[in-house]
Image 1 (cartoon, rainbow, N blue to C red):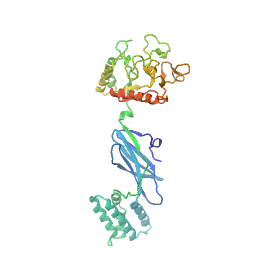
Image 2: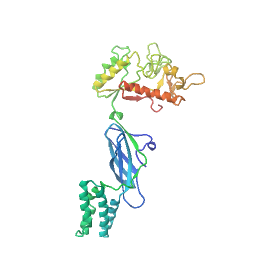
Image 3: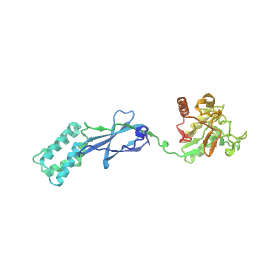
Image 4: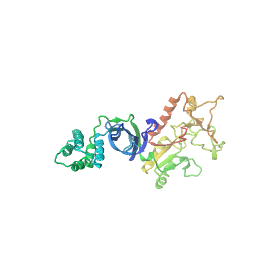
Length: 374
């Protein structure tokens, strides 16, 4: 009953830099011995595990915490073992409460301390040896020996060098993906570049949008989000206020992606060139803004994919593709992709290449359109 563990470890936990990962698990052993537990963690590329102590909560439930300090991927697992020294110490305390402790109890404890000394660093060996000697000494009273045996200092010192020869490891190594803070939250400003023209009624461009960047930054936003910037289809183009009849001057919905002018790796020619877009991104960065793009995996009927890869769409018996719907909404200008097509691998690789293409242009943030269906 390890938490967090997503779908039996199939998927990683997510954190942002500096956040803690609190891990809990049910851990127990046969018998009455005390157990000790550790939370093991490391960056994925590291070889050696780091450890965080785990504390008993209640009813065999243990908890440990580590900090996901850096961007990247961490892995974590659990270890537990019967702790003979802690078991002896607990039993000694119980006996002492009723005056049933004897010299034999302290001789037994001395053996556990001497075993720990063999595993200890040189600096600690001397102190452990002295404590073991005190438990064996004939000139020490039972009260003096008890004070030494149950001292927190001795408990901490022996705890540094446990006997883990019979340690049990959790069978899984679970993953944590650590992102920067903007993966969790950010202040987003949405901008349609085509609406940025200084002249009323004119079609705006990336260059027009550049003059508004300082205004957006001045309000404290850190993400500038652009809805799709790609060519827009003509077939069943939507008009004003989602009208199914468009005039010659209607620019269409940006989410009806694709025409003879290109698809998801192209920019709308009326917005400018790819170089214009990259300059827009660089200008935004100088003002502390990051540009986020819309990732809409759908096509207009005019998208090159429809002609070049017809099997990426679900065709009806009459030779048409059912346009997108989210009842009662209808999107007559959009074809949905068939993600389960028999040609799924080629489709999926192409969709990944869209992300890779824009990543190469400097984009690091995407807003996924309809994530629940895509």
